[in-house]
Image (cartoon, rainbow, N blue to C red; front, side):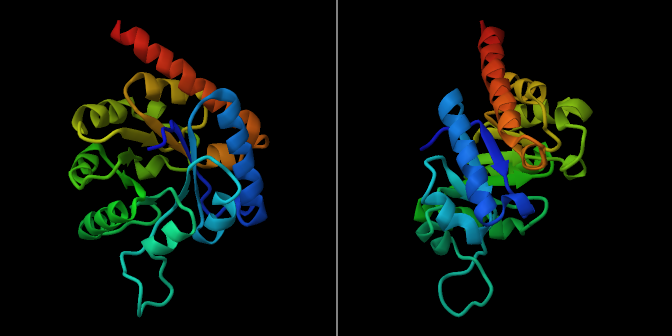
Length: 230
């Protein structure tokens, strides 16, 4: 299992689609190699293969549909993701919600195929519920802060504290509005295993520099976490 502390969701931004997705992925790979911080990226399904074949960092899908191969049109299957080189997938993102029953079946199917799963939740309470479904990680993101200018660590740091305290059977990822190294350091220091970001990197005028700053936040947060336990 690969270890990563930064997860960057490319969403459907123009500068993170097609050839732009590949160029951006290579920047993420470069920063990961030079800083030693684990970085994973979540790309559109149509970009999976050509990105996964060109970079060594984990490449995730943003979603898949719980259908088996066969008589289904317009769906993206877990098997197709696996065959395209996906390391794993996000599930139940605020912008692509699925029912709890579908989450459970999707996580089970992904595990059968060897796909890493990060299930998103809108609150620590929901996060605790989905953690019981045995995903590899649980990402807590209050939807009202996603894509905004105020991070969850600033607007409501108690969400992070509650998530870490309540979700004890899966590593916790925190996201929503995270854009600075201070946000990242705070999250990691206080128990998050990783942070999930998107617009803070993708819409940056200098994605590489922004990534380096966020990676530094991981390093500072890990150091702070160690000191906090001494």
